[in-house]
Length: 510
Image 1 (cartoon, rainbow, N blue to C red):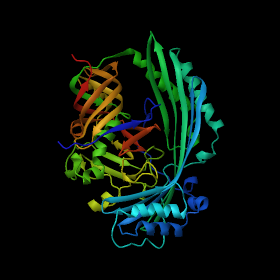
Image 2: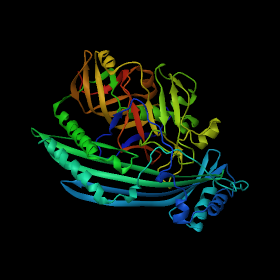
Image 3: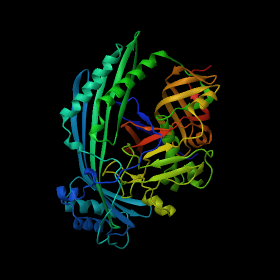
């Protein structure tokens, strides 16, 4: 068997879970002028004009290549964390630089620099150019500014929000958690925001700028009861304006965190073996993302690593299964006005009525398959080159109700929350830790269970989906990150209640 490297799902360590929200329809983006749409930032602040970009691109193509692009980034991130009733951390991180890519077939030359002057950028471009060994190619003589939709409008720049406005939120989350139960003995709370400006300039003559917000508020609690301690947490966030964070949001985070930790005191061990598994709405869609979604990223298919490499146009699931990867959901963590190589945000149907219809493409894979890019070219920062990545990945509603699905199971488990997963992309084999769930006995939800593993194979699991409910929930948290090839990017996910007719559960032996 060909050995494929294993990858893991990443989750911010302070967070115990990722919030979800029920949505009858997926909201789409908004057009119109906002602070996000103002062009010219990099020229005004750092002197990056078209003439300079042409010089750098010409250097990147000085030995040939199919195309080249420049990715400028200026990010400002802020953190404030409270523990034991006191602010123990408050800091900022600034990132500034440009990544320069030369593409020659399916090969990539890449250089980057933190210094935005002509010499440093030309040196980085010379590094990128070494991937090719042919005749020099000229970039476009003129750059056309690309118009994009706005899926995360801001009323104010996040950098204009002072620390004094964030502290009351963190303090209120702390106080609220303690007030909700005498069993709470420790609270950690915090707020994070990041404002990321990017500019993409391509040798094909496209120029695009965007301002990307990201933020979340969290609370993690430790409870003690009868000498036993448990830990849980909750967070809400995404690509929001600061006005999203009201006291109602604080109360929702605090109550959910406390409810989630208290229920852990009344759990039983799960049984072990092969059995039906019902994946609840929302958070369990991490399995959809990890065990199935990565196999539909085009680079794995172009390299013949993925099980789905020869499956375009073929049946991969029952006719009631439709799976979408979407960059156009308003204010969600994986949404993108434009991807990291200049392709406008869009929605991509991966599986339609059980048939695999598309992979997720960047420009390199799109050229290979002779299709248009799907807006899935992403990178962690200017220091990293583009690869196909998911955005917001979700399964659409099905014809059943959640009650009908539960009632159909004689003996199985219901999964509420999963984490710490590992997946072999090639084969699709996975193992995930289930932190919370319930037993299903004679068609009814019974005892709460925790601390078990579920194992299986992604493509097989997809084929074994026998019922889908009509209660789609999308991630509403701000801490969902996905790791691939050493890069972490924010992602969203969602699904309705789903019945998988058989999975391996690692719990207590009968």
